[in-house]
Length: 221
Ligand code: 6PG
Image (cartoon, rainbow, N blue to C red; front, side, top):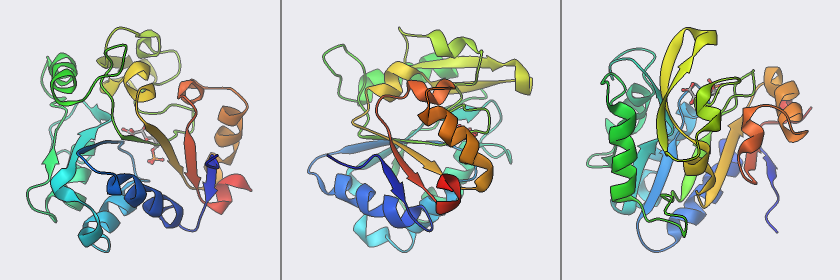
């Protein structure tokens, strides 16, 4: 049984081997990437130190969520994927959430239905969804007390997040939980408490099905 919490300094030291192990499996691999600060180091590593070990020709990148800003905005998750991976490794297949457009969520939902294999329930299946954990226990853009938490019939929605006075485009629980691997990455002593609370059954992140955690020592105390 694979251990569910991997502790490493930095977290990439334990995640990258697992990531490469999954990518070694034959056939196309579809990976959905979260935004935020934590994953940027991983994106850069994959495009540089591990560039020759990633089967880029069999890899398709997707987004877990996106802020409703243009793709060149400082807050854009896509901008960080572009700067760390797409501008470094040519010709990577990558699918942007066009969050600045009104129909972004529906369009991405259609895209997933077209490009991904489906499970028995017809849900698109990612090979890996890479998730962060916010201080309030949100993951993706599934924030506490927001409507997206209750969506069961769509894979991508536009979610109003009143606590941030904004909207986000986000994958929903069905899309995240259908993934073959659901991985959280976490660092920082400031996330220790929320990590413990999620593991104890609190917050939106608790609804991610049987995840693996790749964390740094200051998260586990
Ligand atoms: C986003 C992310 C979000 C993020 C967490 C953790 O768009 O911000 O998808 O869910 O993963 O907020 O962010 P950090 O990695 O910056 O701590």
